[in-house]
Image (cartoon, rainbow, N blue to C red; front, side, top):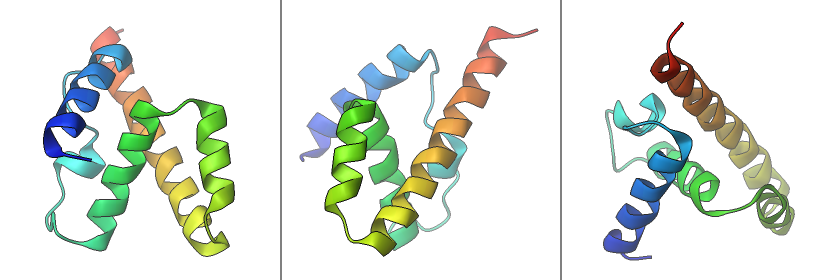
Amino acid sequence: MKNKDFCSVTKAALARFGVSDTPPLISTARDTNSEDHRRNCLAFYLLCSRSPQELRDWLQQQNSAFAEDMCERLNLVRQQIQAMRREVAGP
């Protein structure tokens, strides 16, 4: 995927999620070239661009260690997005 396409998907997803920035797991990364950061970005991209069923199907196609790692990352990114939405909504 080209950066332009990723940026378009990200902007649309942020609007859909009701937040204005990427989750802290991504925006506060110290080493943006690390494998961890790449996987976190992949998790965010997948949440932005796939339905829950498509995510389940994609995870089933991966080897078990990678699928388990990505499942944890997907859940963490989802939790961070939910926390960001609560902050935007206010008390």
